[in-house]
Amino acid sequence: MRRRLSWVAMIVVTALAGWTLAPPARAATAGGTPGAPAARAATTDGQPEAQVALAATGDGSPGDANISFVGRWNKTNPSAYVPYWAGAYLRVGFTGRTVKLKQRNTITLWASIDGKAFTAFTGSGTINLTPTALAAGNHTLTVSYRQVAGSYTGDAVFQGLTLDAGATTVKPTARPRLVEFVGDSITAGTTSSQLAVTDYAFKSGEQLGFDHTQIAIGGMCLSETTDGCWAHETRYWMSSGGQAGTDQWDFTRYTADGVVINLGTNDKSHGVSGADFQARYTTFLARIRATFPYAKLFALRTFIGRYAVETQAAVQARTTAGDANVFYVDTTGWLPSDGLSDSVHPNDKGHQAIADRLIPILRARL
Image (cartoon, rainbow, N blue to C red; front, side, top):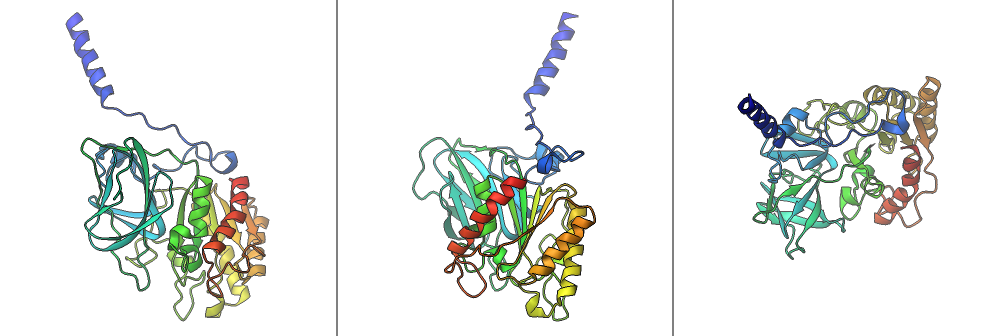
């Protein structure tokens, strides 16, 4: 009997030794709405738990469960993950003094180590992110690839990290919320110095300490038009907005706690009437609400004021329909006189000014 108990104990100890404890579930989303789920669907990187459990934890490969992939990533190829839309990024901790990226073909990317300013890198193959070795110890890394859109055709693909001998990745600290920013070239960071990472959306998310996504491509409208403006009312629901196919995004891979919408700047140029825009905006808000039942929705007045009345009316229509968690944000006066790089697009100063005004609103509601 004693020998049998020892064998059972050995099985239990062996099993426990192979387990890792999951992080505690997040608090209820967006102000503790009654009945809200206690945590976001799946994990912070959007991988189903079964896949995460099988990943090679610690080795820096794309499937490493210590790496958090934020935004819409294509993980079909287990050895090469591809980010879609603007500002998708990965976060990971690591030990040792150096870290390198394994790339396929030439791409421009931005990397931040230990929370310092993002540095631009362009290259292919192995890209050394630490030409000057770091101090020994634990470090953090954030990487965002330049969006493949318009005339830019770089090869945005993550094939893994190369670390020092004996070094390992470390799971980054979980972030308490995820905010999704929906827009056009302004929300993609066009004309700012580092595009998506110097955009008001990326800045707001980072300064709040939240995960964040930028569902934006230059030239986008809210409305489908006869002259072919790419429209969020159809393309928002796609994995890549249609640039890499028409597959629909699996919204179980992440749940937004807040959705910030900045649309209408381009619709005016494509002849969309005010009444049509208002009706489409109201429908868009309703569809997002159905997708994220507990998220706070923020409809921004476009920074140059196009469709301001219609945007506010769409919010009011949703409020009247019983949605208490949708808000109109009046952005009048947010941009300083020297905050534009042209007649429409904010420069770095303009994006920071927007973030400075938006952050307190998101913090108060989320």
